[in-house]
Image (cartoon, rainbow, N blue to C red):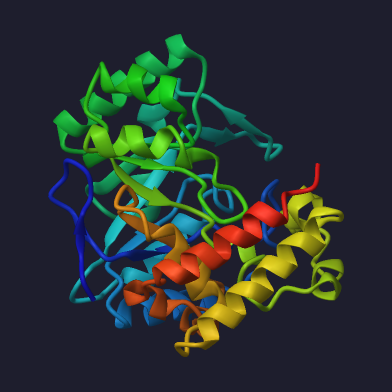
Length: 319
């Protein structure tokens, strides 16, 4: 599998990476419902066996559990993948999550312990905060890099203003934004800024949390576990749901022409831009991994991109 340099780092990463949000399991605010750890580990192993060389997780996923599962999955492997994780979402004894940059030093120690590593390859601020706190926190992130606790530092969900604020303090290796056919807000300003400044981009939710996999239906959504955060998301509810499923149907038709899956077409659409280094793709089983591995070398034609754009133009997202 080919690799690409991530921003200003020496990390050469595959065009798709394994996203470990869902493998954190249930019983927290943004859970995907119950998850079997053995299935999670099998999914990670399948991705690594196929040549994927990086895993993206976060301390908050499963309130620490995702990092522990990732540690179990890579333990004993002769060739270890890069491990990326995130800070700034902390939880208390009541499992209430707070966004803050005030405990980054404590957070890094917790992640190092759960991941069972001495250094983290890419450490990211998960969500932005108020400007003054952001500046102080990014300074701490830069110190962690100097101290050797992390190799490279990045951010997630930052806008143009926040990227410029952090970049003035210390170089940003990467941005992790949401980017998909359903959520393309970063395309006009954020992605060009990153490309102009040598900031790598690893976009998350290219299949919009399952909506663009070709396997999602209204009936399946109605049957999601009560603790699956998607039940509360407007994209999974009418009037947006019918439009999004029609988009998935179109992607399926395009993908089938070359023997690819709907999900692979959705991922390939995000990778068509030179500003996007790689895409984060989640899976809860080895079978799900099989559904998107082909995206690593799948390129949509100009005509197919125009076909997709025509759908976007003629089917605006309902309010």
